[in-house]
Image 1 (cartoon, chains in turn purple, cyan):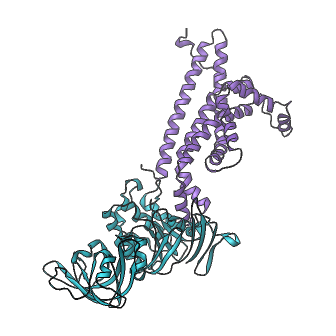
Image 2: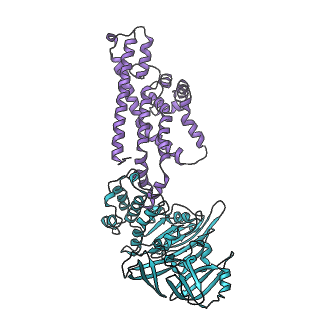
Image 3: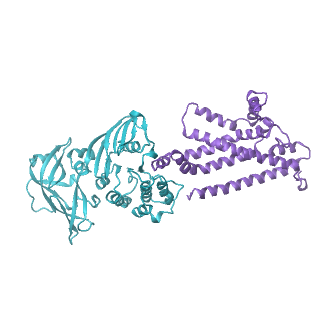
Length: 236
Length: 359
C-alpha cells in the first residue's frame, strides 16, 4: 500500500529524470532529420527494394522490444565487428547513455517516419508544379511550399519520437542494461524500484514525475503547433 | 513560341507543331485530346518523348540534344483549371509568391494587377474561403506578377459555372486588349470561350492539329463544322454598334450591311465580336419578302461542303466577311446552289445570343 509520506524523490529519481530528458532530446535532434529524409524517400521516390526499406523501418514496431535490444547488442557490442569499429573511433554504444539514444531512435523511428510520410503524401505535387512555373527552384519550392505544408507532420513526428524516448524500456534495458546514473532511465528506475521491497513509494513518485513530463511535452507541442500554424499563415 | 511535340500515351500518340505569337492563341480539343499535355510540355512539367521548344530565339527544350530547361527558368506563367493556390498562404502572400521570383526590372506593378483583377477586397482572405471565380482571378494575378514571357492557361474556366465565367471573361479580354498585351496560350474545350477570346485558333483532334489560323478564318471554314460539332460551328465577325432603337433592337454594322440584334449592351461606337451560329443561318435564292426575320444579307456562295449525314456546310462571302451556314443536302439541291451563286442569307434576330457577343 502506497501512502503519501512514502512518495519522495531521491537522487536516484532525479538522476533518472535528467538522463531520460537528455536521451529524449538527443533522440529527437538526431532522429527528426533522419526520419524526414527516409519519409521523403518512401513517399516520393520509386526504387528497387523500397518495400524492404519500409519493412526494415517498421520492424521495431512489431518485434518484441527485447528482441530489438538483443539485435542491437549483437551488432554494437564491443566484441562485434561494427561495435569494435565504432569503439576504435571512441564511440561505445553498449551499456552507455549513447546506446540508450540509439535504442530510442530505433524504437521511435517507425512512428516518426509514419507521421512525416503521411504529411508528405498529403501534399499535392501539383502545388509544387505551380510554384515551379512561377519561378521557384527546387529548393525554393521545398522551403516555401512543401516544408510549411508538412511542418505539422514533422512536429507530430518529433513529439512522438520524444515521447517514445521518454518511455522506452525493453530495448533500452536489454541493450544498455540498468546502471544508475549512466543508463538507468526513468522507466527503468521505476521498474527497479518496484523490484525492491518497500520501493513502491519511490516508484509512485517517479511515475508522477513521468506523468508531469508527459503533460508538459503535450502542452509544449500544442503551443509549437499553434505557432507553426500562425507562422505559415494557415487559417483553415 | 514554336513548339514541336511527339509523345506517346496508352492508346494514342500526340504529334504536333504549333506556333503562338502575340494575342491569344486558343488550342481547342475535346477532353482527352492531349491539350493539357501540350501546356505541361511547354511549362516544362512534362518531358515529352520528342520535342523542341523555342521562344524568342531561345531554345528551352530539345530532346534530340537532351536539353530540358527546368520550369522555374522558363518563365511561362501558368494558370491551371484547379487554380492551385497555396493553402498555407493568404491571397496577398500568394500574389507575393509570384513577385518574389520575377526578374528585376520586368516586374508588373503589384497594385496594377490588384486593380486589374479586382483583388483588393480579397487580399487578407485564405484561399479555401474563396469562390471558384475568385480563386482563378488570384491564380491569374499570381501568374502575371511572376512577369512571364507568355501566359499558359489550361482550361481556366472549365470548373466555373456560367455566371462565374462571365465574371472572368472581361478580365481576360482586358489582358488581351489592354496595355500588357501578354501573349497567351489558352487551352479550352468550350467553343464560346474561344470565339470570344482567341485571335488565333488551333484545332486539336486525334493527337494532331487539323486546322490552325486566324480565328475568323478557321471558324468560317466549312471543314471545321465536323470538328467543332454541328451545334457549336459558326462564323465570327467584327461589328460596330451604330444605334439602339426604342424597341430593344440594336443596329450593328458589319462589312455586308446592317444587323438588327437584341440584347446588345455595348454603347454606340463599340467594336464587338459576334458569333453567328451556322445552324441559325437560312439561305434563300431570291430576296425573301414578308418574312419576320430582321436580317437579310446579300451573299455569294464560296464553298459547299457536303457532309456524311444529311447536312451540308456552306461558306458565304458577305462583304469582306465570311459567314457559315449549315443546311440540309436536300436544300442545296432544291436551291440549286453552286459556288459563285448570288443568294441571300437570313438571320433571325435571336440567332446571335448575348453570350456570343463579346466586346
